[in-house]
Image (tube, rainbow, N blue to C red; front, top):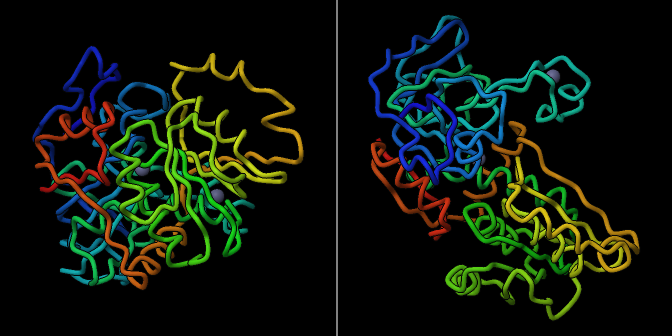
Amino acid sequence: MVLNRVSSLKENESPLELMDIPIPEPHSGEIRLKVSACGVCHTELDEIEGRITDSRLPVVPGHQVVGKVEKLGEGTSRFKIGDRVGVAWIFAACGKCAYCLEGNENLCAEFKATGKDENGGYAEYLTVSEKYAHAIPDFFSDVEAAPLLCAGAIGFRSLKLANINDGDALGLTGFGASAHLVLKAVKHQYPGTRVFVFARNPRERKFAIHLGAYWSGDTTDTSPQKLDAIIDTTPVWKPVVEALRNLKKGGRLIINAIRKEEVDKAYLQKLSYQDHLWLEKELKTVANVTRSDVSGFLELAAKAKIRPEVQTYPLEQANQALLELKTQKIRGAKVLIM
Ligand SMILES: [Zn+2]
Ligand SMILES: [Zn+2]
């Protein structure tokens, strides 16, 4: 499924085109996967609708890719034919700059993203450097493993940046693929922590309680207690302002979004220094993932037996899956199967 040009999903409900393209050959150091599953991420909507402007076009989107190693390029040694591996948003980084050397390869100026700068997993085949492929623990099916690679890995990074201790109160505003995995991870890593979920959709709120949230309410509701940290996974501004209001003194808001939409930007006018920012509140954003976020989360998820809730679509129905993601028909994570 190929993205040829940028357009609004409102005007063009089928932005991806089903095409036959040549099977990619693995270069030196690369492996070729026969793809079996690929997760659908909100970032694909940002690419399609042109909020990420430097994408190469045409491109095959998709950065939560699971498949079997099918061909080895020259000089590869990490995997053998038939191994099951995953590819995440991080397709490559330089490995030499200060950011790379200090473990923040997600901030590398030469960061390349799967399905944006190089062809991704909405396809039958994909090639990637073996250094950027991840072994998939046996515990997961292909379909279950896919959403762990972005929704899970970036949720894991957000949780690290939230910097909470066991027993702290954590908020999640927005309750899609990433937040529901964060909730499951928190139950394991911070068993004494209460999770408060803010979501505009009553079905998502119910789902959150079903998965073990302590409380759930609407985006604009006031949580029954002030929160140590809140992770925002929404594409808009209202939840940012409302979350800052619900933070404790010294609390931290983590925004996990590659881009914010413009639709409700006027809501920022409600931002009051006194109510939303003062008393040493912090705001931090999450950008990309490192390989250790991905492998770390895969390891944690297998240990904690975190199985994502998934909804599957055949590859040909990628446009349908994206449309449903856009219109918030969310329950867990969407995954394409080949
Ligand atoms: Zn993603
Ligand atoms: Zn670098």
